[in-house]
Length: 230
Ligand SMILES: C[S@@+](CC[C@H](N)C(=O)[O-])C[C@H]1O[C@@H](n2cnc3c(N)ncnc32)[C@H](O)[C@@H]1O
Image 1 (tube, helix red, strand yellow):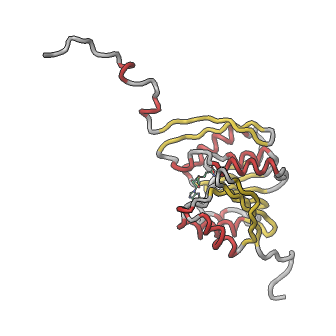
Image 2: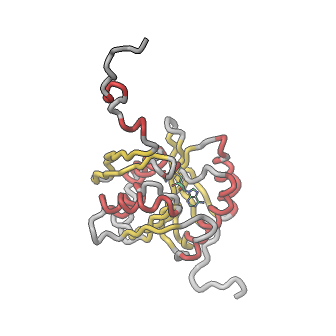
Image 3: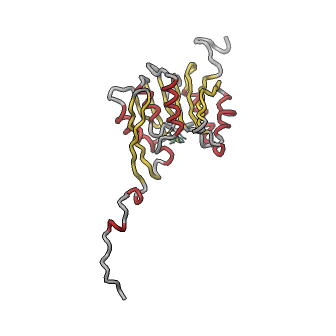
């Protein structure tokens, strides 16, 4: 026999939490570094994948720059695999002339975060750079090359190494912050790949987050004007 009870109101059937029914949503978070309050929007969902969020390594790197008083003023800076762009944005607010890069899918998110945080006139641009493919469209003499949580895909290690070799100027410095995931071979990049061309030091380890911050510089720095056959 059919029930005579009225149909329930749609709201009692479908929770008000709309995120349960969307495959993507945005979340804005605030972070404070070096006296700047940053508002960073993360667009979660299948489209952006790992580029969507701010990872621990990015926060560790920002903390490191703050605690070490790293000077960005007047320096040319490039960030690789920027995701939300938080690291490059901080570098720009601290006076760097910054290029923030990632795969094309992440550029809109980065650009929006740049607009929300860097006053017009700030020296920052956002560009596509796929490791091992696009680096020759960029200068080869950056003062600072930055990357947070970009060492996690073993097939990309040689590509990333080639990109770092090209971008880092002879007197430049690379800062890489990495979650040290055994299953992703992260340690082997720092033990076997980077040392082939760079002098490497562990600048900081965050035990709780399992994040290492490495500082790297080219192994051979030739004095200006020196030619190997002279
Ligand atoms: C784990 S996320 C880290 C994002 C951000 N740096 C952070 O720490 O919050 C890795 C980033 O590397 C980028 N990426 C992965 N493979 C890449 C490639 N071959 N070339 C350029 N970027 C790449 C992804 O798009 C993503 O933004």
